[in-house]
Length: 369
Image (cartoon, rainbow, N blue to C red):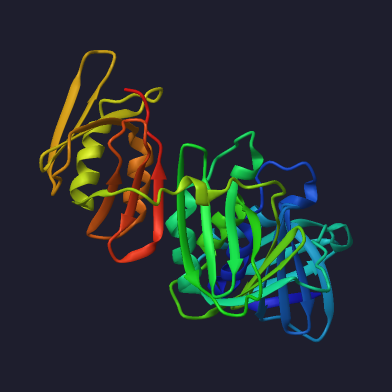
């Protein structure tokens, strides 16, 4: 029975959208598959890893029949990518195998029953519902995602805190050594609500969102969050646990500030980082009259030194930082200048903000050099 007939690129688009979350290593064989549901001309593609589920739709089904199958995601995507984009591609179901045909190329892929596919159950009622533009949400995630922890035993740090409050959505990420905060305006939120979105979900949303003004509908229920935009629906479990109180981490009383060119600082840090090691990524920052000195050394007694002119008129300060934490923020914020705030204490954290964005705040703890 023929299921689909369309061009290669038209078929690849929805498949590539959902296949990104399919794990290469999996405990259940069916999790390597995507679920294809055909209802007349409308075809749905669903992938899940039991934590995240992505669904997308397309209108290239053939005939009025309804049919559901599951097939290996990677194999189907790899086959389509390798085929020439010349004629239409036909997908048909023959004896429990998915036949892929175009021109003189033919493939037969094993299928598993659609009834075995573990789709995520969604609640009837959502506690929070709001809408933001794709551009705003993508910018919000981009500004803080790099501070998320990776495989931390404090599992609640392996994700991003989203705080929904009247008129605004805040995003916060921390790994215990640095913290990033940003926010965007949003309508439709009646009362404050906090959730922790898993790291994988954040990275998938960054991949799927674009810089358009198209709307993203966000719904939150106990243990679950849903994003709907265009033909895509992403449903994710939430991380349970208590996120640290970020308001206590962000300094509010710093009085010593200076502006520094982002590209100049980034270049100096990248060069100084060459002489650091994987085990020790420390660089030394020395602030003096209108000057920032950056230096690094290693076990071979090699040394790097950089100098940047800045407008700094306070007493000298000598402090060390993990250079990776500084480079992470500088490579993700596309501005000409950053605002750096300090305290006259080498044990105090540094606060990096943007001159034209009051909502972005990046706090990085010092380290002993």
